[in-house]
Image (cartoon, rainbow, N blue to C red; front, side, top):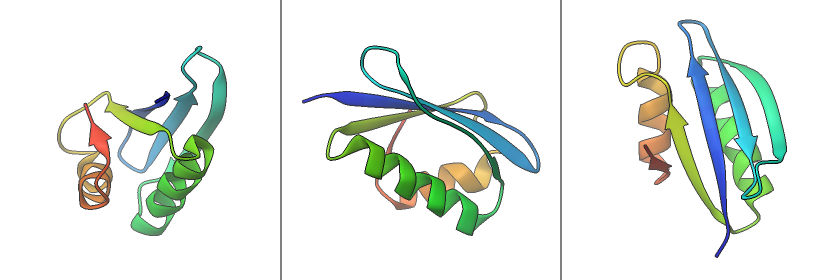
Length: 81
């Protein structure tokens, strides 16, 4: 099974997400607002890119600004490191 990697540089009002394939190629690079509809769209787009492969999410912070993103990822069963 292949894996893709989704990393987020977290901020107060926006996050920047970079998604890489197993070889390190860029699949997506996007700035996204820190609100639930935007985050859900991002998750859906990343899962579409994964096409059934495992997605591992990594964030540069563990509290504060990414709290909503963390909650949305956990509530949607995403692997988060």
